[in-house]
Image 1 (cartoon, one colour):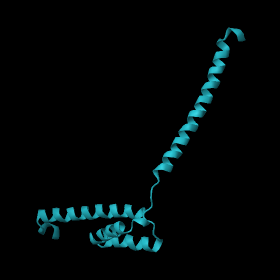
Image 2 (image 1 turned 120 degrees about the vertical axis):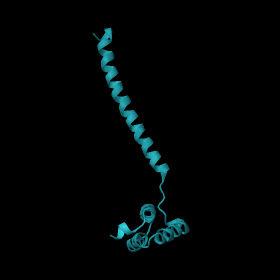
Image 3 (image 1 turned 45 degrees about the horizontal axis):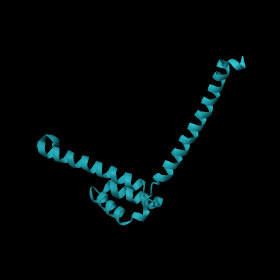
Image 4 (image 1 turned 30 degrees about the horizontal axis):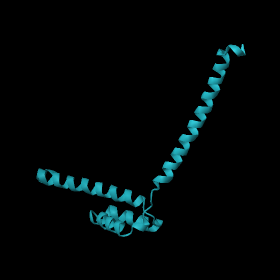
Amino acid sequence: MFISALQSYAVAIIITLIIAQYGLAVFCLLKLAYFDIDKKNYIIWNLIILLAVFVGGIVFLVYYNKHPEKRIQKNNDEIADASLAEIGNIDEKESENSNEITTDADSKDDPDNM
């Protein structure tokens, strides 16, 4: 009964605000996941972001930007070096296997070995 009494544009505004709050909360929680804080502060920030509509997310983003030293840095150089090392190991193994295959095939085709 209450919903039917509301104007359709009011319902659209409320739905838009709920979706915007959800998007802001998810964005802030993803940022919080890569923030180096203890468990107690993590839980407090979770509650602030989720329960204080819009204000909690905005306050967290301000805090996040004021304390860049607490962010967990992704070291892409180490990841790239590790993946290059793995590729090098794979290439070496493939070249060893291909040498074994060619040596067997060469020995069968070689008329001197018959």
